[in-house]
Image (cartoon, rainbow, N blue to C red; front, side, top):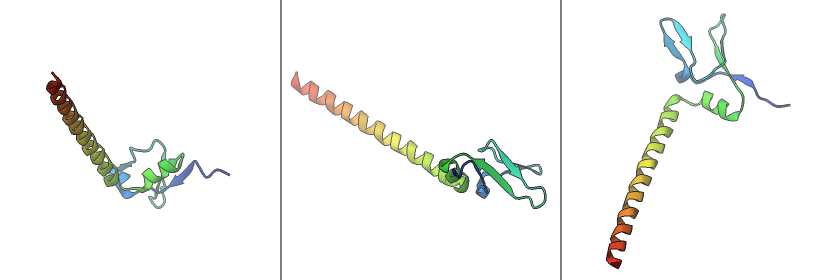
Length: 92
């Protein structure tokens, strides 16, 4: 039997509280227990479960790493292009 979809308790950082209301914007389907206030989100796979359980700060850190990686790649590409232009200029 497949364990997904299933309900999981998301990390506190996923909850958005405003004017006495709570939402969980990263998840389409969620439920708040009216008796104890417990909130669960419905996930469809292991990736969704991992997202729900991880703090949003980790998601932000991953984005920052991707941005830094892209900048480094762009700088390297620019250096290679400049070196290629210099080498091509030497051949003339």
